[in-house]
Length: 207
Image (cartoon, rainbow, N blue to C red; front, side, top):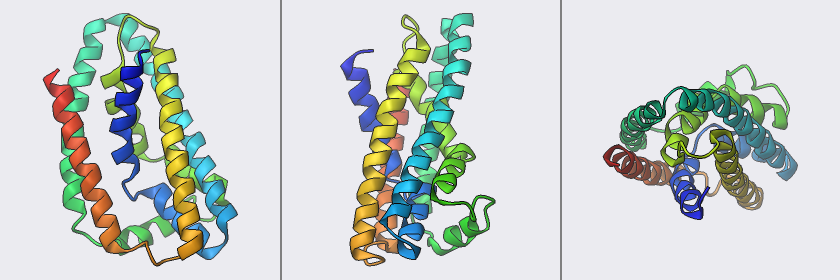
């Protein structure tokens, strides 16, 4: 895999990672209610959850490319359309408050697990995490190289970005508690991520 693909994927996944979603909310809640260690546990649980999605994608997409190289092109096109849709809905959702989201997450089945378990299962069962490997990752794959190895390399990049962001956020919350976790901040991050998703979706659909 060429460095251009890896850097391109990193540029694509960063705005998606910045969306204040499940892992972001869990880190915030656990650090406020407990300590910095709780946020670190959520972070690494989330990372393992992403690796599970990468493994499933490696098996499925490898089989797809082996059967037809044209099928990968179709997946890329559908993925690009989906990314545009996800970007638009993400931008629109920035207008809504985060209170309802937090209340909903408190009722989820992993809510009473420890930090690592919460991070793990919230990502394993999160369709948005799965969509990264079903729509975004295929945009950076080529049929002339082993797909599983390419997905593995991209997964390492994805996990690194997520871990750095969540550990940074853990430190911020541990230092400032709730001062920065405001609706305005969430709206700004959602709009940034939405714009990035639309841009990459248009790019992938046009290629």
